[in-house]
Length: 458
Ligand SMILES: Cc1cc2nc3c(=O)[nH]c(=O)nc-3n(C[C@H](O)[C@H](O)[C@H](O)COP(=O)(O)OP(=O)(O)OC[C@H]3O[C@@H](n4cnc5c(N)ncnc54)[C@H](O)[C@@H]3O)c2cc1C
Image 1 (cartoon, rainbow, N blue to C red):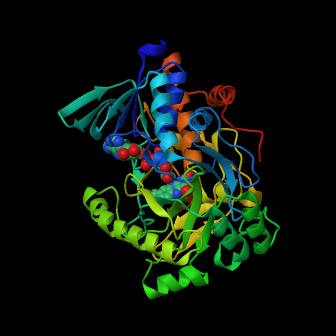
Image 2 (image 1 turned 60 degrees about the horizontal axis):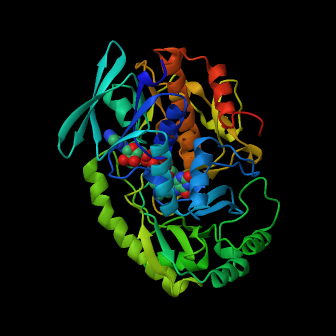
């Protein structure tokens, strides 16, 4: 059958891009529907890509993720995996390079883009999705396909198709944020501050770290790369929050984005109580977060060594959403599976990020994965109950709330995206009509053959 089977992916973030690449690599004809005018979602927003390696430094992603990293490398925008000497490794890169890599990798595979298109209703007949209606500038369009992948982050397509989802009340949801980057940072001055003031930082939280905070600060200095949070429990940020100069936050999360521009990314804004599935709530959040960015830049320039001559170089392309809906699937990723680094025979992707739940004000829950290892995500977490020809990838897979605090990071979204896209490609190739009917061991073999990491590391 091959190319005569149409796969429609809703959402072009980490999960949707990887899903589209993998589905095309496995012979499907792929269209991606994306609400924004540019593909990439949070993947091109300037954040470090967490969850690509476990805390021991072993890689957990391959295939599309590595192709995208290679694309960044070719554009001189790849810094690579950096350890934060707190909990995790992040793949640091220049988001401008990633923006081009995403477009290039999709184009090379012949993936059709339907940008600026919001999926707003779904037609389901006899338990099968048949088409999605999208709102576009020129009006509405109905897009039909054989197989669908919901990579919307919000489980938007699943909800439209009637799949049961879970979503906490607005006051429980993790806060939204607007991240930003500043260039022209005096890195030697910043790294010296980091080395000399471990008490201002969050360090040594992972069970695999047996060094003192001072030794971790020295190791960061030796790396020359500022991937470390400035803690609200420290004197510097604590005083700024107490005086009202900075809005309450757990930390100023900081990571390198470009050596050439001497640029770092920063995450220090937050607004709780926002249900980001509602356009009104999400839109009202933007001016408040933008004001926090201005405060943040002033704080950095006035108080933090190395930032005196820094300039704001960018803000994220949109308000960042950590949490909305999660689908109910054939299986569910649980808190214990994440905490205990559980491995299962039906794992199709690996996660390793700590359970990371941001709260209001300075609150944040962080629970590391046992032994700095990784856990399996069972195939059933990608298969919603009730719609036969739909797969789900990324932030909205079937998971408990705490487990989602781990699997929502982008490395893991790239991995579940690869799995969903490969599964869709195999279904197309073999004429399988129900996602639940796919032979999981065959999927695992295909994934391994295409660079995914589904076994062999802790
Ligand atoms: C402030 C913040 C900081 C974070 N820090 C990190 C970090 O340091 N490292 C890390 O790895 N992760 C981090 N995360 C988590 C991570 O960025 C996200 O969980 C992850 O990117 C989700 O990927 P996704 O592909 O599932 O969704 P997204 O990247 O959100 O992509 C979903 C896409 O679907 C589109 N879409 C939604 N609904 C529709 C619709 N109805 N029709 C058409 N298109 C639609 C959206 O426009 C979007 O582009 C952070 C998140 C936030 C908000």
